[in-house]
Length: 207
Image (cartoon, rainbow, N blue to C red):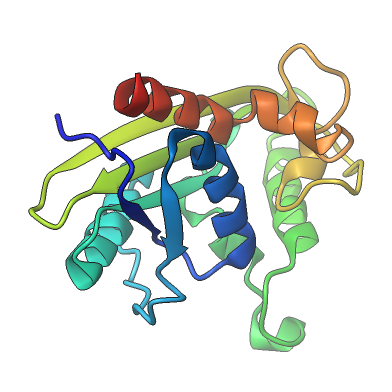
């Protein structure tokens, strides 16, 4: 299996916050990270039906366009009682329609949609869920590696906390009473789905 080593790694994102977070995680291993956005690379259509498929689409696109190894992630919330939805459509559920206001993502709207679908199942609806994260590393020659992380928990309503983002205010991780949005960011990151996936990546690539 190929290894990243200390070469430059393209992070397949146009999000400065995500670049900063991933760069900090990889800095101890001597990896210099640059974003696909800073290179002017286009964002490929995420047409996959799984987290793995979408992460690989983004990683391969960035590797081919840049000629450098690339890292992409795809993540989302999966609710057992909803058959694993919203899953790969996690962000789509937060997209506002034109009649709902200006374009953009409304995560309260998305959380309300999840809660509404559970309410239709009655008071005994299962509330267990999990956050999933897939990290895909791709090289320009087409080789790739995939690492999957998961954080299990339950859904709560109404939303609680202001420290997180996305569905964090309704997600109570297993063994805790606070939501992800109520936890100190460092505590959340230590037990998150992304931390689980990165631990696997580091073990495979740098040890």
